[in-house]
Length: 217
Ligand code: B16
Ligand code: MG
Figure 1 (tube, helix red, strand yellow):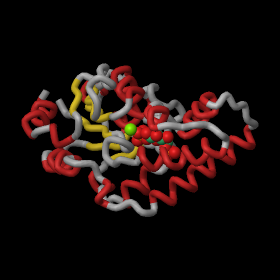
Figure 2 (cartoon, rainbow, N blue to C red):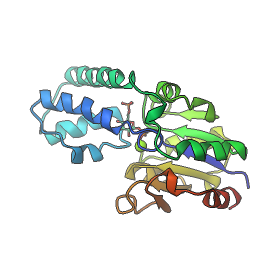
Figure 3 (cartoon, helix red, strand yellow):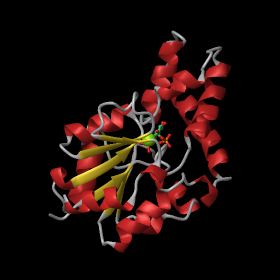
């Protein structure tokens, strides 16, 4: 059966979590909220709007839509400034080798990300050419753990969900892949990602033999 491979962006292909963190910390700091790395974990895979709501909940702050919109713009402006400095060195270890193997064996590849900045990031780190389809925060209405983003990617790649394999670093993303009936592969901490069917600390741990079994499953 023909397979398809879907990659999350932040935390899977590039380590942008640190930039999201710095940008959110500035917003939170301005509001007198103590926003830590631990809090940031809970924002992984979560949309920009929902992330702000979670930060405001943390500080017990009720805000007008106007204020919220202004903070969302500020946060993204800041994030874009960090993004401007990104290059190939930000690609996480082992990612290119896995993408190259899939390309060499003619596997359909898509991006499935909650980020609205996905395309420019892929361009900046120079790996956009690996992707047959890109589904991101501009294309979907329901954020992970809703399976919409991955179902949309599978549809565009003309592959059934049960033949689609998802690489994800967030709990919400693993849940989305599982709900879609896809094979979920967690990238990160096995304790955090215990709902995933397979977990690897990073792509250097994924060998060609494992990729072959996925392709031929
Ligand atoms: P943006 P992913 C997610 O991307 C990030 O994990 C999350 O931290 C971020 O808030 C979200 O994208 C929205 O990003 O502000 O750039 O639209 O992990 O689904 O690739
Ligand atoms: Mg992610």
